[in-house]
Image 1 (cartoon, rainbow, N blue to C red):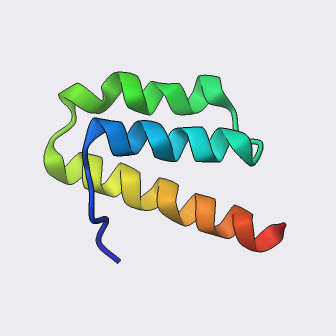
Image 2 (image 1 turned 90 degrees about the vertical axis):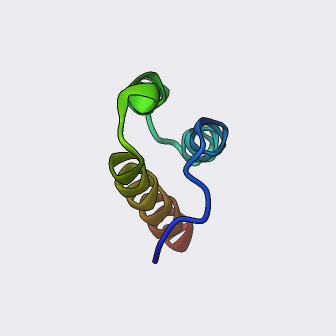
Image 3 (image 1 turned 30 degrees about the horizontal axis):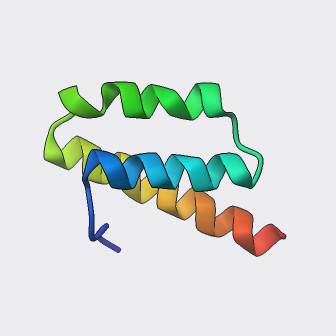
Length: 61
C-alpha cells in the first residue's frame, strides 16, 4: 500500500500516534529530524513502515 501523504507534518502526526501506543519518542523523533534530507522515495518507505507498525500495534490492543 502506498502512503497518501509524505509530508513532514503527516510524519509528525504518525509519530505522535505511535508514541501514544507506547513506542519510543526518542527513537521515532530521529525520522522527523531526518525527514528534510530524505528523498521522496525514502520518506515514502519510512512512512509506509511506520504506518504498518501502527496498524500492527493497534491489532494487538
